[in-house]
Length: 74
Ligand SMILES: [Zn+2]
Ligand SMILES: [Zn+2]
Image (cartoon, rainbow, N blue to C red):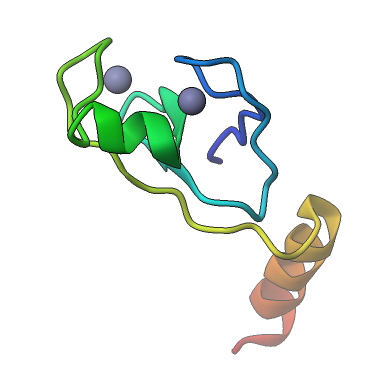
């Protein structure tokens, strides 16, 4: 599961789970102004930075749904 880092690795600004954040494939995490200024390239690994999907439900909530889907199908 994706780790939801709560801090920009460049400016140490706070990142909320629902706010815009950008990650590379190694899960380096940056806020949107820093990502813009770096041209969407991760300074750690030179990888592309893409928008992190927002997490709107709690981990427990999703785990319960996953189990239900496995047990009951669909
Ligand atoms: Zn930043
Ligand atoms: Zn990276």
